[in-house]
Length: 120
Image 1: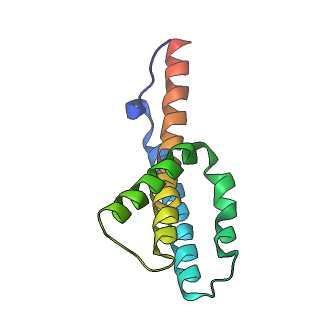
Image 2: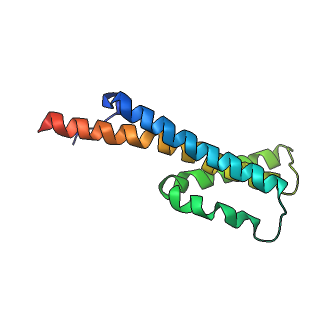
């Protein structure tokens, strides 16, 4: 079994990945900004539920990383407001890690298809 890196990916797949990642990041930023200026009832975090389905594979890594960053900042004395840690959590998990996932996936698929064609 051969490891397939993304260096064999086509330019078009990187463009598609950049578009998908940018759209994903834009949606997360709009959702965070909208929730910052909206009312905070008991279930305001549920607005991020659609991203749980979209980002499911990568959030196995993203949620622990985001929780670790929040706990580390709390330990060193950096305190946010009542909802600041939640915004940091969703921003890191969905905004950064989820958008990187959508940027890299098209290139990884393209590189995989390229390696399968070169072997066959």
